[in-house]
Image (cartoon, rainbow, N blue to C red; front, side, top):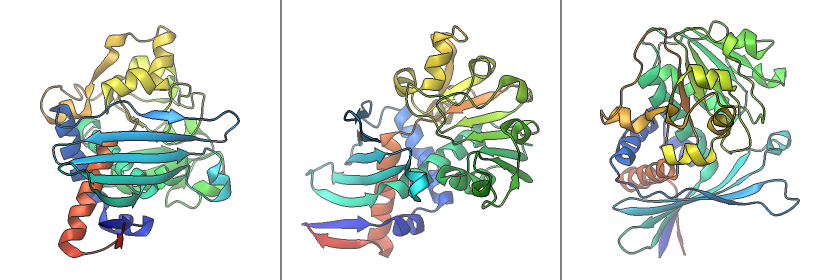
Length: 315
């Protein structure tokens, strides 16, 4: 049996950001229509371990997929991505392993592409000032993605490590507040466990993509901002089980269980409405979904079959 192996650099070549935005639109719409089977992710963290191993399975009518990814928050200090692993693609007809792909590259691209879909649906049409909090892998990928869906004229970045922010093609702010005060679109991409974004800093009409926190015990957004925002999510089930941004605000009594306006896929299929006024604050809580990884892997696999790329190995 031959298996396709796709490296990090090959994923970046085969899955362009513009293409991935379109792939994610289709995937999120399919998810909303019930065309993916996707259980909640699971994770193991041995006592004393510096990171965890997450397992994210999903299935469509044609394929099975599994992302196995190690999440090590201390990796940036080593010059490594925090997310390292592989996406496995199987035939839905025979179960044969079809491909092994670099998970770091797929995660970086598809996460920003999903934020771009949310921004396209929820940000004001005249949004032009972008603020990014954090200066790691996701900051760089969002810096590429968001200008593909809005005419961005100014980008301001804040990072606790100023030298990291200075490596990006953007203005560098001295604080989170300074970065977001005039922003029309805010993206949070940090590994903070405590809120970094405050309600009093956010002007009316802002759209927020909350990306960095993906576990129940950490959050980037304070409860007041969650309460003041129209909340949209990638997956409702995932949010109520895994999102610290949502769960902390719920426990604080700032929001109720009915606070989620809808999934992004619901807007795409006309089941939910998006922004309702120019002064509304909209917030997209991104957790990342196995269906997104599966859709990305299928796209890459089909593209390789059409035009080549990657390496086929005997397995």
